[in-house]
Image 1 (cartoon, rainbow, N blue to C red):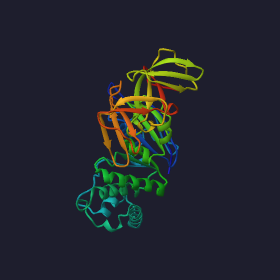
Image 2: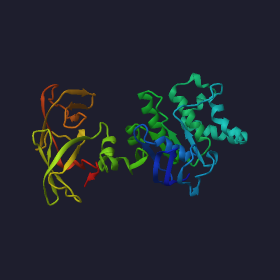
Image 3: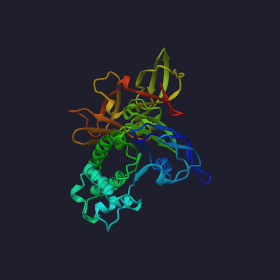
Image 4: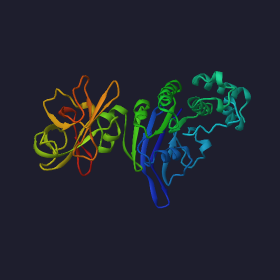
Length: 361
């Protein structure tokens, strides 16, 4: 297995810049997820690594070798696509073995590799079955098995679960996590689903408009976002952002008045930045960080309550464009259309500059 490094990688289609100088280092054996909204460049970046697209500039290094201009078949990678792309007239065994046969591997080696992959993916009883007689999850496992038999240095996954229903996606997430643990391989996985990213990744790359917004461990991104975009994208539901105005700064304590909430004030401790009085800021609060026991109260009206069984969310208007989302505590007394007093724990609040949307720390 091998690590992967990108150095100032850029990609342009004509005059349109899609990837803007990405620097990234993925260690040997890491599971790294590229996540971001549609059109952010995550699949393009994966295709550059695979060699399916040519880089405009920059260097791609796999296992210590510069593969920027190396053919895809010689990069030591295997790719699993959103579409299963199985040969319908071939059995599971034949689909998994086809690439090895085309490359001239001896039959004994093909049998060994296919059997190993089938054992890992629990496909042993399905080797004689055709794709039409299989479920979507089973077909995706065959597509993954076709990559495993190549014994690549790096596995690349391009939204492999998008065609599956919700229950199958959960099951396949677990199977891919188990596969990574068993193989210990370097894996790069593209998804727009941040839940997939949080549950699968050793490290997450958050992309927006061809730029890396932040790179780190899932819980590091959750607890310590660099900007409004990362704070809102990581976490489900996303972070709330409330308009605020700095009313005073004393030492490391910054007091902010929340616009549109009756002058509610929160005092936030900042270690590095002291915003000027009158500065416009965004106050970030995650839905799960509201607490009825907090002394600082935010008064609002709950317009919709979403009961999901183990957890409930209340939605109300806020001063921002999106509704305020509050995770309601067990045994809550909130009612639709009624006033609600949500406690804010100042120690779990995030502060962002309203203009740059960068984190104030």
